[in-house]
Length: 233
Image (cartoon, rainbow, N blue to C red):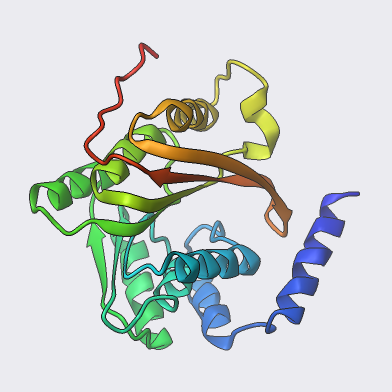
């Protein structure tokens, strides 16, 4: 099997499970026209996140990495009208396009887009004593994924589901030491997920589709107050 076959199957399920959504299609087109990188999740992964948020019964969602708001729309649609989605984006242009996409989508829950370096924004959320989130989706720059995980745990409650995208990197994470900071960032993250004292369980799912070969990590929070001891890497 080749990557075209994976893409064909992805497209097949996109059609079977509802077909193209004009609102989401327009969001991707608006993002492309604005020059945003074409790295949004696929439609099938969007549906997967939507299902997971529904299954979790999530009311409060934190997203680290907004881009053009494509995944944000999928997650927001899964929340009750009394819910809240907070999404963090470093690039002001990306945040502006995401606002346009969210406005056009007419999502029924409040969405806060906070602009700035995610680690600083996460610390600000923690300092403000915000209520814990039920689900956290991490899909941003890969080098600080481990630090994002630590912050996500602190902003969680027992039972919070943490999901992280791009944790397989076409299999390169299994090749040992790397000169690619994106790969080493994910290797650090995967090791941290496996040993974090605040997590009850974790797993990684390999994924193929229109985006090629990658994967998602899943973890359930047990003790938000447990502190991971940083390694020497």
